[in-house]
Image (tube, rainbow, N blue to C red; front, side):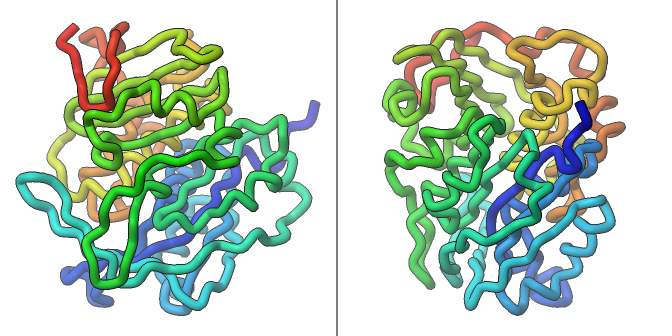
Length: 321
């Protein structure tokens, strides 16, 4: 069978993060930018539907994506999300400078519709459930949940939005969320109820590693804890979760990119964790690694057991198994 011309399609809006060290005063980001650059640099044929306002449409970062091989379809928006991020000892404090608007469902090239992988990576809840019908029923769908869990008001700190049911979430085969975006006392089974049997839930905890829960019918089949992959020095934590999720989906869609070895459930947590540890070592999208760098970083982790069975019940818990 002939291979699809596109391996994965990413959907979301670009955002602009205030950056005093950039001559423009901002740096382009957003889950769709990190995810698409990640899969392209890992060797997947990548397409991206990117919502942009007039300012973001001229961003040099879009050329970075194109140079990596990402086929971009820009969707003009009257307003895109803008954030001010402040890193503190207690974590990131994020302010919404501009909230953005929903990303409308648009026509796309027919060749994209046969892509085996799809990825919904909102930054400000802009991808509505109308997009669920655009994803082919046989495709593998990854959803970056944290982009739906933010309450935004211009000029105000970003706060948590409670998890809620959605057609995109129920359709998703792989869902990623940061523990920062869900109250730590949240029972994991409250999240399971929003996903379909057979889905995988990834809960990332930054420097503490995280969890992967494989769901059965109404209950998890298995809970795995992955250990953190040490960085060479954190410069910018932005995009770590989106890069991790994109690399994890890439290991499902194209197992060969993660090397010739067997992994559980067809995905490679160590490969994804290595990618996530690398992206924080550079500013913005400049930190997104290529496949060679990820393989070198993952090989370093083979000296210890990096994925462990676990029994956890809450988002905020991590055992010492």
